[in-house]
Length: 142
Image (cartoon, rainbow, N blue to C red; front, side, top):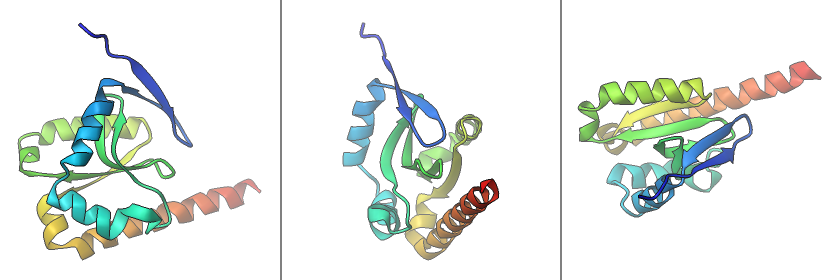
């Protein structure tokens, strides 16, 4: 039986570990993205449209995040129908990520597909507020 190797990835704020076996799963997920994931990626998250870089299907510890921005330690999760059953598990996962310094914004497939403008507004506001707070912290240090 193959032993799982833990790999450490450094973000601007933290060293985040992940299991190497998730690399293959994340790569596979990128090839099989949902309609909602394609929509939010193409209309909002790719090519630094928001002034920060996002990556798709980022392994962190034992999880794979749908979208992740290391500059802001921000995860964006798009939940399909199966997440109604997994809501307790999602809550524990979000608490764990928060303890690692990662904020999770969670949307349903329906929200993304039926109301992408509102989803975009929420994400833009979060990013704008986070960048403004970062600039204030830098100013306070000087």
